[in-house]
Amino acid sequence: MTLTAHPVLATLTDALPADRLASDADVLAAYSHDEAEWAPHGHPVALVRARTTEDVQATVRACLAHEVPLVTRGAGTGLSGGANAVDGCVVLSTERMTEIREINHLERLAVVQPGVVNDHLRAACAEEGLWYPPDPASAPWSTLGGNVGTNAGGLCCVKYGVTRDYVLELELVNGLGEVVRVGRRTAKGVVGYDLVGLMVGSEGTLGVVTEITVRLRAARPAERTVVGYFDSVVDAGRAVEAVGASGIAPSALELIDHHCLKAVDDWKNMGLSADADVVLLGRTDAPGAAGDEEAATLVRCFEEGGATFAAASTDEEEAEALFVARRMTYPALERLGPLLTEDVCVPKGAVPEMLGRIERTAAAHDVLIANIAHAGDGNLHPLIITPPGDDAARERAQAAFEEIIADALELGGTVTGEHGVGLLKRDGLHAELSPEVVAMQRAVKAALDPHGILNPGKVL
Image (cartoon, rainbow, N blue to C red; front, side):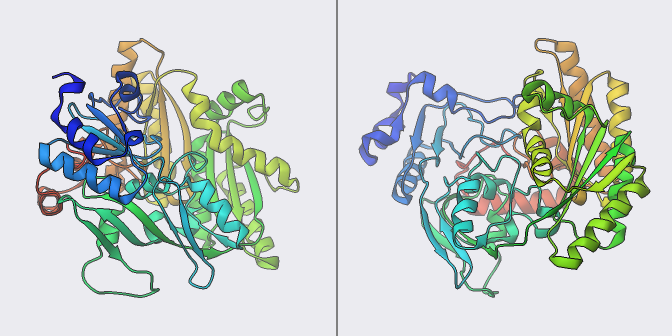
């Protein structure tokens, strides 16, 4: 069936303002997948760029009327294929739903549409002396709707938690086309089941989020940065374990290996890879003397792990440049070839062993694996890089990918910490969860999306 002939287009045309709907083939292709280059995607029949809750509701109802799948996406920065189109679907983009509706200083909350970019909210909150903590590396581009969909974490989640810890209330369109609100604005509330917690991380399979109310914190003190250089990722992992055992809560603890540092250097000429094979970046935002003590503890833990150099930075500009480099690693590595991105999370005590296993996996399968990590909470992001067009390397990379998942599970970890299951981790989900638990989750899906139109084929 041609694009113009699909009956859902006529219904959407009648229901939506003209600037909301697109069916041009080139436009549809651009919106048919996220950043998970290895995940398959299909061909949508239409794109809706919603601006209002009414737009979203009309789109869901049109899809219900014609039994058409609906795939919701934000900025398209996902890394698991969770926003990838399926054949014959309507793609619903929330990128134009960008209103920050309220920042409430008294209640310490903000109300936003799902297309608000994470960093834009953080900047608006900062003007009011407030802070929204979740800060994925994609914060300059990713949207709150996508962050909710995958329960995004980020650099400071080691101390302050992930998206689910900050979402108070959601407005959404459910699988019956109804606009509903779940959660509440009050600090406490235990009426009924925690449907907010259920929706956060559900990757658009249970409803389409149209408004988000998030908890805020007071602006925090300036951070102190501690830098450690290591000869191996395993040594850096031992330092991470020592930090965990020390009892302090760093505001960030990030690992960057030599491959990542060199990729950033080659791209931006920052001169980072000359001094170390692995860099561990720690931060503390404890005020005054407590901050000095925590910084000293981080230095000591780095040295216990085998650091060849460890010190609290006295140059804030230089320290900030290192964290900028951390955020730039993924786009820098993308320049080298197709990336297969992992997102495993293991207990802190298992970080050294898991990093060692990743190195052995790379050697065994003859693939290049670069390592970045939210090391402080055990969330590791091995990035498997393959030469363009090398099918044999691609097969070896896929085998390494599966081996890393198996090792994470064997060490008591999980197959995804913050990127979501999407398409790439579906086998991993079934390896991690028992058949009984999978059946419970499928029952939830069937109850909230009885017609099976919401992001079908993802997660479960």
